[in-house]
Amino acid sequence: MNGWLIVDKPKGWTSFDVVAKIRGITKERKVGHTGTLDPQATGVLIIALGKATKLIQFIAQTDKEYLATIRLGITTDTFDSEGKILKTKEAPQLSRNKIEEVLSQFRGEIEQLPPMFSAIKSQGKKLYQLARKGITVERKSRKVKIKKLQIENIDLPFLTLRIECSKGTYIRSLANDLGEKLGCGAYLHQLVRLRAGQFRLEQAVKMEQLNSLEEIQRYLLPLENSKNAGDAGSLRSE
Image (cartoon, rainbow, N blue to C red; front, side):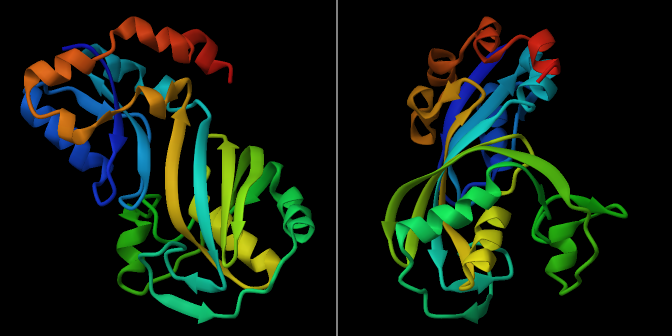
């Protein structure tokens, strides 16, 4: 089987859980994904089967789009709702203008420090493995690009943003950094990936619809559909 399966990853599933299920049903050895989604996040997860796995490195370079709901007034060690609460502060009654003023500092190319609870490796160990032992190590900040940072809804203490960003952007870190700039702390409460490259949530299939080989074949997009997300040559230039 060769092609792309655009999955709407359910909450609570790891990206590998999805890969494992697809591999188990299809018996296809070459199955992978083009970009991890945290277990608590939902939305577009691109699964590559067969020859499509050779294009993963190119598809992974494409921009992503998210709908992120941020909870102001609470800071956690994981920067999301699953973590240990570190600080609590009453969220101020921020005006839209004040929020916009702070958001403007995060648009464009920015330096971002990856969270300790991430799969980035330090001396062969994944950071989240160290973090679970209470170990914090020095991380290098990385340049990422925030192409869109738009307010979708304000219902304090919750703030919902639409975000378009480059690969490697941690929305959890963005939520935490935004909370620091607003002076009240924040964590990522909910995250939906709306788009990866040109593959959109509207194209995605629910996991409960993928319980047999026939169902997977029905939703499998042919390799040629990678042209819609940019061919390998154009992806190299992004």
